Image 1 (cartoon, rainbow, N blue to C red):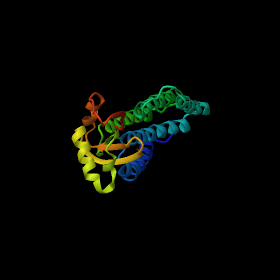
Image 2 (cartoon, one colour; image 1 turned 180 degrees about the vertical axis):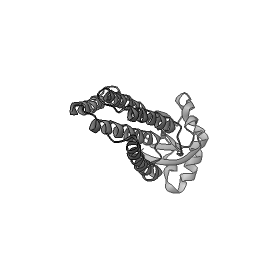
Image 3 (cartoon, rainbow, N blue to C red; image 1 turned 90 degrees about the horizontal axis):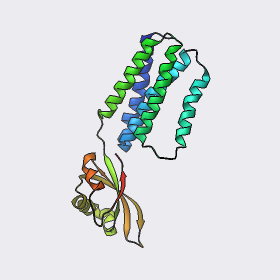
Image 4 (cartoon, rainbow, N blue to C red; image 1 turned 60 degrees about the horizontal axis):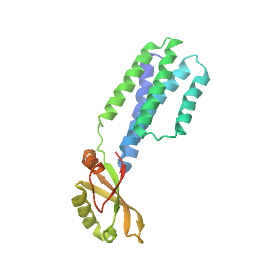
Length: 212
């Protein structure tokens, strides 16, 4: 088993590469909070699990068992949100990782791994260094405003009717027979859209989909 110093050095290199890929390549394009959380959490836990699988004399079947559990979860009947699915994976992987210590003398590394997972999850939940956008789908009836040259009027109308501080709008499917269009609006403060779950938005109905 490598020394604790080498173990932490390898972890630091792995984490640095993951953060650079997610923070400076993926995130500027999408501003998608759930997947930032998922990518970095998965990367951290998988690194620790694979490190211990190769360092401790345990059966290869244990590793396959972990991913068999994930395969079963993939075919679940009730949908699980991305964040909850990530936590479920982390909890499962931690159990496998910590069980490796029973057969080996790697308790310092296990302690460091557990502490690192908890700290990283805490930092991710605190939304370090990211400016996230929330999004919501809206069925909109004033399709004459979806023209590019009337985008300012469209945004002003949506902000007046929803009360959201909208930063951008994506136009989806357009139904000319019913004179409606599916829009996805993005806004900076995720708490702004909470009241839409309860409010009657009249001719701007909410589909109940929230992207935060």
